[in-house]
Image 1 (tube, chains in turn yellow, green):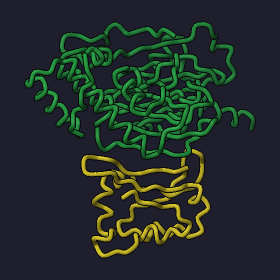
Image 2 (cartoon, each protein chain N blue to C red):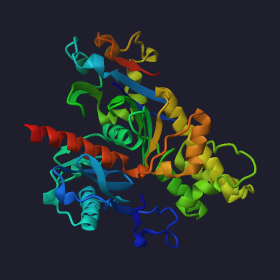
Image 3 (tube, rainbow over the protein chains, first blue to last red):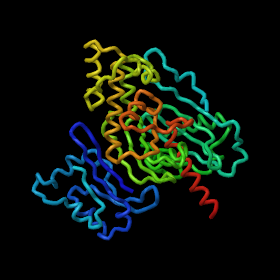
Image 4 (cartoon, chains in turn red, yellow):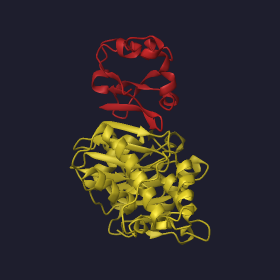
Length: 94
Length: 300
């Protein structure tokens, strides 16, 4: 399942996509949980009883601001969450 | 199916936004002879529904406005449909809560997200060909892909902005002083297509609508511009995950032809029809999840 967390408003489209098929049997030992400086990720049991990572609910409405510090404009060449997620489950839409 | 409209919920003098609450029970079935009775309660931001499923089939439902207290809304919704068929809470084997107030349903055995429940409900209502679901809820909007069993394969939700939601339509209904059920049909009562209102925010859209009225637009033309704007916003949301054949719309806005027809035109695809009230999809899905869980429990 592709789970898109985030929003679209007048300023743009801000979604973090998590491919739960790659996330269920995480080979990176859930490295995203600690890689995110804002600690936006957490592990949950989803509706189909699979253990997956999601973006915490309050962050889903503030992604543009929460992720700004990790974007190229802040000096990063790659996003810490995507780099830590070696199975390639995490993607940003912007 | 003809649901009973509660007389005291019909629009009154200044309540143009008020949509019809209704309760329905399938009187051709006898719940007393059923093996498994389950219930789904969807406590949404604007409306609450309780659906009863008897041996895996829809038996009855109650759809009403959510109050300021989620547990009470859940209780009232369930009580309404139980009163209609003479059922008691003890007769129900499994209750699943869903919607934004799902964790506040005191008698629920399990809480499941509305995303999974809408997919399951749409699969029941539209059949196993349903692949793309658009849920236009009271204060959020969801685009969902599912497989032939109603399991979610892709979803996104926009609950930050009220544009393209039922609440937005209520605001316009109130502004125009036209009953909400008449907005859709009236939006077609114009000679030419109109441009959508440009504001993304529902508050600014209201201001823009006022400006259009002052500029000489008729009410119907403003309504058409607003319906067009809602359609364009949800279509842009849908385009992010893509639209497949087997397109199904759930939620209260599915009853507004002014928005639905414009969405169909923009997508170039027709939404699937159903005889079941589109507003109960989430609660129906929850009750069906309950049926599966109770069946497994009963089988040991």
